[in-house]
Length: 283
Image 1 (cartoon, one colour):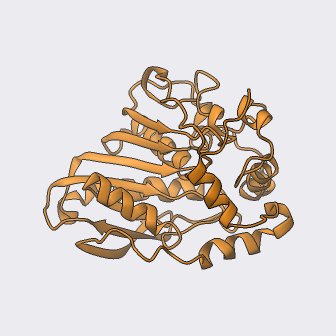
Image 2: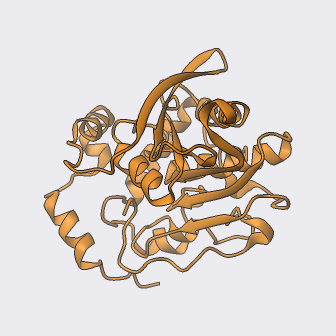
């Protein structure tokens, strides 16, 4: 497989970052700090209201941030899980995407600041994501949203959390999720997929970066086998909500989404839409 050429806008964005050393070389603490200290865009979509609260999860309180683009009640709600390989990211650093989702979808967005590895070993991240989704479903009236139009949304590692929450909601007869939106999701752990083999030094996310974050997230437990941690390992995809799966042509994990029958995490294993040419991960 020949990697796509970068889209001009993507190339300009990457060039603006200057020379980026591999994550392993920079060190985990520096990479995480860099993400959190990055300035937010000066102009982001305005919200009618923005509130924060805590959701109980496995003896912990999970911060959630609620973005309401309108004062009207009874609209859809998106439960959003940020990316970052399960080891970095926050509601602060992913605020621009949360606001864009709320504005574009005209929906309330509940962004979940789930616990991060390695400080909190998996499945803490999944537990927090599922607990937050249950909380939104139970409190739909108080939140002013329609519980029948509850969707889960995630980018990168957050996409895996969204797919896992959809699986668990089906298995546990939990929240009625109407859709899952998976943005360049990291659904699989197969490092032999075609896109990783073809783009081991892809912009923003190299093969070594992926392996480094996997090792940080897994800790002493080693690679997970639970489909709630790696949705591609699910063998039964029946009864899942419809999915929108978005991938970039220059993202090394893109063929991990649909390389195997269990990899797409969509009803009846419907293939995802074609990758968007020239786009990297986190586009």
